[in-house]
Amino acid sequence: MTEPDAPLTHRPIRSFVLRQGRFSPAQRDAYDTLLPRFGIDYAPAPLDLDRAFGRANPKILEIGFGMGETTAAIAAARPDDDFLALDVHAPGVGGLLKLIDAQGLTNVRILRHDAVEVVERMIEPSALAGAHVFFPDPWPKKRHHKRRLMQPAFVHELALRLAIDGYLHAATDWEDYAMEMLATFRAEPLLANTTEDFAPRPAYRPLTKFERRGLALGHGVWDLIFKRR
Image (cartoon, rainbow, N blue to C red):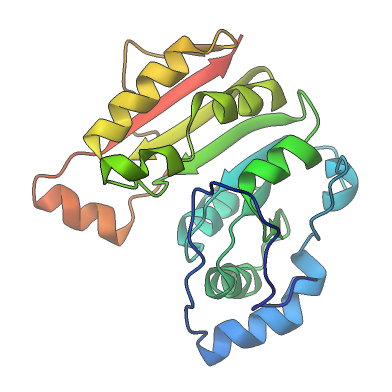
């Protein structure tokens, strides 16, 4: 399994910067003891998702789970779906592992690696019933927009990995990124919008503390839900 401080492979432009976050003792313990059970090693070869979860239920990709609260809540509410959770930040991996253990979740697996490389090299076409990309880094400065994850090429790769009628659900609290994603999703011929433009937040996506705070201050949140044609 990937060590907490192990370097990730090099790619010229990434959508993230590795933060030197600090583990709490509980996060460190969860990382060390639970990752061998719930973690999947990165390898540039197709991943047998049914074998990884030990069953043939629908598979949902979760990209960028932060400290894991949302992923754990969704997985707990949807026990008949399996969730492959991707993130690069070791303390967050420890946080999600701690929640998996505390809630007795069996339908989550974690892969600590760059989502672009995982999607391109490990996920086979039509393998996913859905993909969640909640609050990706907005890279607000214009000169950094090239680092945004939801670029046309990556959206196309994600769409290819969705089964027919599989869904892509993204959410952001940055309006310009929301508009950019809406245009990108609309331009992808493999995707069709499930609504006119932005979608109401579905019940399965819980509000985070950060999101509640922002909404109380009048900040917007935009959800996009498209389906694979």
